[in-house]
Amino acid sequence: MVSRLIDESERLKTILDRLNEKSIEDYYNPYRVFEWPDELPAEMWWMTPELTTTYGTPIADELPAERLHALSRHESVNFYSLNVHGIRELLIEVTKRIHTADFRTPSEFFHHFIGEENEHMWFFAEFCLRYGGKIYTQPRGGAETIPPNNAESLLVFCRILIFEELVDHFNSKMALDRNLHETIRQVNRIHHQDESRHIAFGRELVSVLFEDFRKTATEEEITQVSDYLKRYMSFSFESLYSPQVYRDAGIENPLEFRRRLLNDPRRKEFEQQVFRKTFSFLTKTGLLGDRDLSAFSASN
Amino acid sequence: MPETPTTAFDEVTAWILAKNPERESVGADEDLVENRLVDSLSFVEFIFTIEQAADTEIPMDTLDLDDLRTLNSIRKAFFDGRTPVTG
Ligand SMILES: [Fe+2]
Ligand SMILES: [Fe+2]
Image: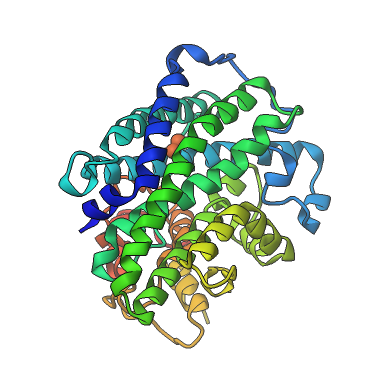
């Protein structure tokens, strides 16, 4: 029974109370708070260079500055598009659980979560449509392995947490990057602020759910869960390398370009940076045994 | 002697074969997912390959995954009614 476990965790309840209060304090009107200039200058970085997929590779040295700027523009629209699709998925899952018996205790928090995510989805979509003219589509994936069937909620909240931590790595860096346009910094800053609450909640909930799962799970089932998570992490990371983006930025052979980048030594380093905190959490709880994702790369 | 004409659709088959070097051919009605010729990790490339070959954009949100299950269903969904010969 999921609900008893959540109800029994005094620690989770204390954290939920604090986060609910914080959500009310931090509440803002997203439809008023943003400055949306008619356009953003094309001749500048739209993402922190270190967060672009070409950074630190020989490809970046081959390309002229204008091309790198254009790439960063399309990559940023792709990044916000990933957010739009990721939020749709997590809204569906959390909405399915709010005010059901198993999730009575966190339901108050789910109201804040759903409300905030709806708003995030709005401003990310707004950014894409205003400055990119479109939202990149995204195949859903990384989830076709069949995990143990009593692990459904555990895996759902792990996915949400992994996704939010990935995004937050980018948000927290771009919020502080003085070379970026103020609108870009603002979008990242505001999202980062809300996400710190979501991530704090996600870690607590995942810990409780995994504690419960582990009581009855076999070694094999625990490996299935960890393989599932690694596959999802790899898939999410590789979604940052979008052939549609490379095509739109005028790269001649987008698939070959993508493969070169995914096979470049920089990829591993970048992946480890993006998931540094996520790996620490997942290995500490025992959800993952190590930080090695290489078996789950599409570029093999 | 003219060689077998290359059709745009052959690029899709070629991509699958390149991904699965142990295979020499793919049956037109073979289930690509069940037979693990395509999995979610290679989906980004797979979709893009079809988009390029069919010269179309595939809307992922309304996409019927069954359209991607076999070579025949892919041909029917994204290629039929288009001029097939590219060179
Ligand atoms: Fe969010
Ligand atoms: Fe969130």
